[in-house]
Image (cartoon, rainbow, N blue to C red; front, side, top):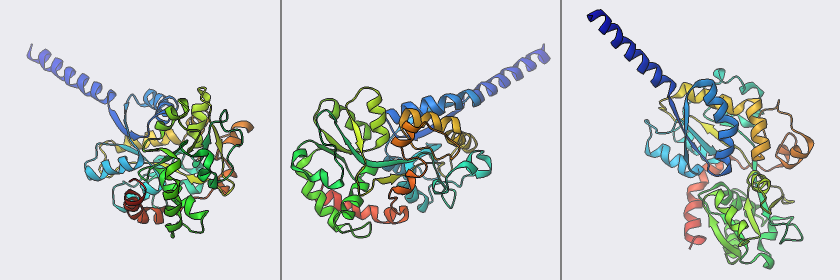
Length: 340
């Protein structure tokens, strides 16, 4: 009886261990809206099926995600963090990101070189851009230039991102470039954005806040992302992308594993799933995201609407090290001159 009881007890412990393993949870800090929805369809579902793990999303912007890593440094709540390039670089410089074991990423060798961090602290998972989005029903002549943001016809009909998000950062750079400045000299950009304020209905902090503004026709123009435009248009929203003739600002959303993450092995499997050809193609079709995996083939219509192949080379990619270094002063200046 004692032996049977002991065996039964061992079986219960073993069952509990297997059950616990099968229910392992991966906590992922990710952008919201359609980005999260399409990630779940393209990456999470095949990942969960292959591993038996469960993925929990915690929604937030790049700035919010890096703030979470700072607040929990050494013992992070997140196992994987999505952040745009400049913010990921900032996190790397602060020692918040673990080094990826690229040998365990079976798809790493198929990536474009500019999707790879030289220190392997993060990896790009798609190409995007900051460009112009407009309502083609209400704007008969599509915008063609960053300068169009300042036109009187868009007064009180415009949305821009604030400095806590990538579109706000990129607007500072774009406004500086078209007014004789640069990433290193943003005085012309801040002066121009200050003059732009009468045109602005909202300075948004989350990308999905733009959708209801277009739905209610409170705005006709926004500084926004082509992938968000494509996803919203596919659901019936009257919105289209215009790439400024001066050049869109390139975006490289990244994924990383925080230093001290509890589930690093599982996190690397998740990242490898993101980089796989099937997931990259699925995400391109659903989210209008440019693939970073060179082996992905898209049909001509989709390829022409995305940062894809040679189109990636035509965008302006700001120096992430400079952006990371300058961002604190930009944020302070934005609060003092723009947000008031």
